Image (cartoon, rainbow, N blue to C red; front, top):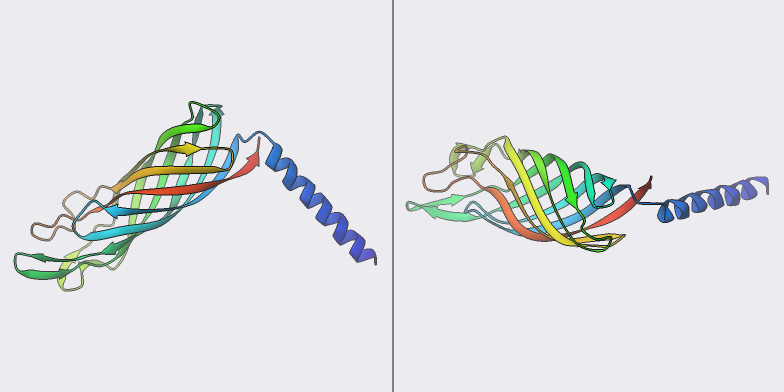
Length: 190
């Protein structure tokens, strides 16, 4: 009976703590989300990703933080100079600074993530062509969307710049997509 009382007391304290965190000013928050998009290049068809970021509201209208996640790009077969190229899937793991501008408490917002995108997966660009894929490059992800206390819904462009690395004849290597996504805001308190 003593352990049941302790369990109920512990559950009550935990619930009270969670409820007070939900009602506290949301100056610190963890954002967890999903995104999907259509590729902007010839070697991939689409992407699907998960997002994880931490944001601190410096002022009520401006947030700074760090962002990471994983974006999976689905390879697309393509004929280049009469050769069928079987492009491989790959992933991008960004490590970026997050900047957000919130003109109003609820409504429109815009921002960007800037950093480095690590490209992971098969070492070759394509299954049947011996060209090494790039390891990564400068990463940018501007987004525009709608926000409220709990959710962000957005349109975004994400791109990892690789220069001329991974190019096959007329096909430039591309790690970029235009798409949509959403994120759930988990308040961490003041």
